[in-house]
Image (cartoon, rainbow, N blue to C red; front, top):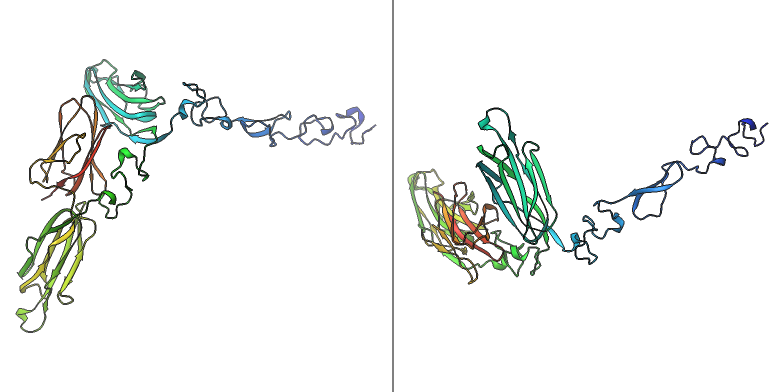
Length: 482
């Protein structure tokens, strides 16, 4: 008997009245009797804006996964403050604290990348951050420990991380041991005024060897900077307030809007360059960063006929040293081809060298060429021999002394400081490469910093002194190499 004509006799029918062979979801329940005949995993829409990847399950329930990337309990679709905790709203104004202040990503560093300690007690380093800094991230590496072997050599790096919060309270963030980890990733979310890292011996408190840890660059979120001249550079970092810092046609590190280019005139020490015999004779003029210098070589001549002993060809080679101290061969001019040559070099130039040789057979009679004075754009530098040089300042700024200037080696920077105030000294070359950077904390007295230039090329360097209230920048030191 097969009343429903499905090929399955009534006695064995799973679904009387329906076709037992039709089972779309392969769950062994014929579709006619199956309350859910949709394949599990079939896409659907559960009408919930907070879910993604909605699909049917085995019971034909349509459901998805709650999307909450910042794990604050508020789904992404309803997030007021993506990336922050929507539930934290200390002033109850409806805007989560994380989005209360617009901020941009900035980077800074501790004054020293390595913190070391030896003996009892602890050594520490402090970094003061700009106002309203938050979401501070950096890494401490190099944690180590030795708790076996010679008892006099045992140690355990103990690193404590504290910060001063918005109210000025010191908060202990964490303590890390070299016995447990070698690297600590630090993430401090609240607003932070400063960070304090301390290193001590966690074994017996008396480190017989020197302990050391490495401190990475710090990333933090700070208020969007004021940019009154709309050049993309924050006012506090502006080289040239009121103009576009990005426009620097002569590539000397000084934006055109602040590039005070006054004509300068520098003569060669030997304006009449003479040579006789083999080899060559040269003369050099030092310009101390003069920009776009030009001059004329005249009196070029040649005699290639007549008495062989009187034959010659004036051959003049022009070379120069750029702002980075790199030497360049510019061009060679022959008396066979021309009587004079007008030379213009572009950018900041330290020195120009002219060499006169005989281009006929290398053993000339007496030959000569004339060199005009060099004209160009004067560098903003006051040269006073080996005396102290005072940077031009406003009444509200700190006075800086730099000596000797020019310098043939090391030099010293001296300035007054206020107690517990952070000062940053930065020295850059003419293309803004940072050669020296140091942060110190004032003690209410005069401070002197010695600068070693043994690895620096000759050239002109900017010195910047800055703190939270002021910034002084001047093209103020010439480094001369033998």
